[in-house]
Length: 186
Image (cartoon, rainbow, N blue to C red; front, side, top):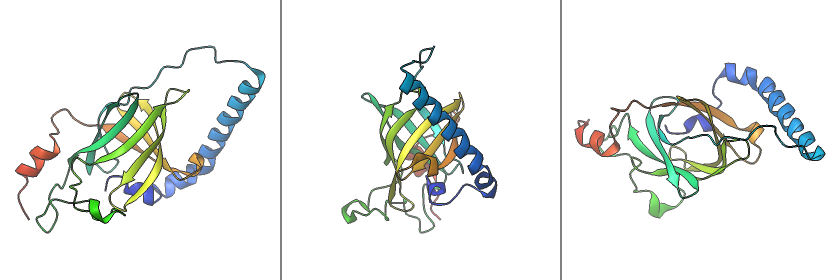
């Protein structure tokens, strides 16, 4: 649901683009290393990307609210398309590796933590938790336009990670508490 695309590859088309994406990232990394080795600095100031707001996940199954948490950024599930499961119950964090946390509702759950500003204006060194699998991944977020965030989840090596785009949520989307109260039991 929330980050389940991190557990599978985006699509055959994005896999076909992977060598090109890898090459672009490699060239960018090599350019940064050359610049660092020569002691030169970028000719312009880096502007930190504003990633705060409410964003729909790639399948529009949930919306994540990203906000300031001190100097870092964090995010919680703010809305779910299906806030009540097939059994009529509110979905819980049932796959959490810690049994004492499995009864927590997913709506309202903090799933993004520790995002720090990066030298290139993006946010990285964070973590994203996927309640669908109970797994946690390293995380980088880049803003590709005012309405789109590129979310990259990875384990260890970023260039081997998987990405998805989240779109800004409409202002009238609602919140977990409102949708859970309004949703009919199945």
